[in-house]
Image 1: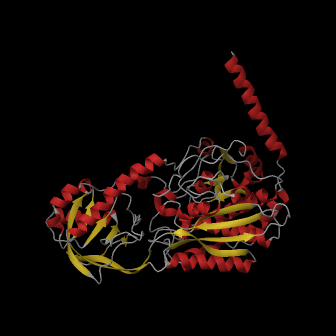
Image 2: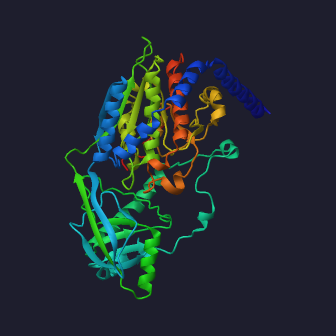
Image 3: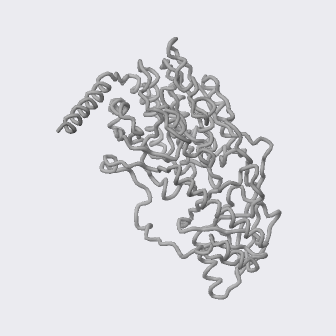
Length: 519
């Protein structure tokens, strides 16, 4: 009885607290309307998207393409009238890498091109090379004893790591989707990784890293990899740790389509000789091993509040097989458009607004975590004075889909505030505020430091099925109208946070090591 009584009292207090926050929140709907009209009548998103993707090219961290995009963003923010725009180093990253020339084709039993891309930080062939193909079954690809035993079979040949033929059943289902109301009402924790899980993966990655070394020692020409997801012209291409300054020179690694891989397997199984031509020329750069984030500010106007910050951002680095449009050019495009809107409309935020476009996200949130370590909380777990001056950080990094809501990251006090902020955007399909968490992107660095950090909920479109880390991640897969909607909401949220009398309520800093620290 006593237990139930106290539960009832606690629930009532929580409800009263939520109601109080909601009642106190005065939303500047006039400013929201002004932002919305400006974006829908004169959006710069197509132009920003063109320069971030088409003009800059692939944006692998520390590559020339990443630096082109960063310098363009800095100069553009300066032209808009923003202050303190710069490429800010966050710490040491490692080697840059950029492909300069690449080709792969069948030489026998006939000549034909192959759909393929070199893996980032892969080695060079030093001119075109030729040779036969031998298959290393996917079931044995992690068996180092098997690889050592068959080393003589690999010498002077291309080693194709391939399993069985993929299923094409998925082709009968839509590859793009929007979130249904039922999905929004039942959001779950997404993309969540624990430190324990990651440390388990490290053991797995260490084994993976041994495989190319053993194959290289066998005298193989190159490793060709594939997977069931590499179908219908889409090839997913990533890299591991080749960027680190202590990484040894890698064997040449190329990701190819499953259709080409299965054709090679069938030809070999029927007794046909398969020969390939391959040329990989890439440039490594270790003259500057520092990693960089792009930052810029709209200065606050209130004498008492302008030293406080509202931050927004997304990661600017991408993988190298395309131009990183949805992962995460889209987030950077929206965030740049949001600050352009706020600056051009002369809304005069009370708090300073700071945009940050991160590097090294794909290697473990390196840029945002490095930034947080430098400014807000070090590895000694002690909060720096600057941390207390950041009201919130808003992140966008789940593709090109429009915003449907926000993950409140378990912050019960902030949920009713965001519910009020979303009310003017119900007609745009954005209204969900969930206390669930989402992980694996840059808001986690801030959350770890006890700074309110949030990722918006987005329609998935074809992010997971087609564009995420693939050769299809290009401008043509951006949904421009969705990005306009996102820019309106982000700009409004950032402006509202900059104007409210109080900073946004926060949770305590996380205890223990940051989830991606040192990995």
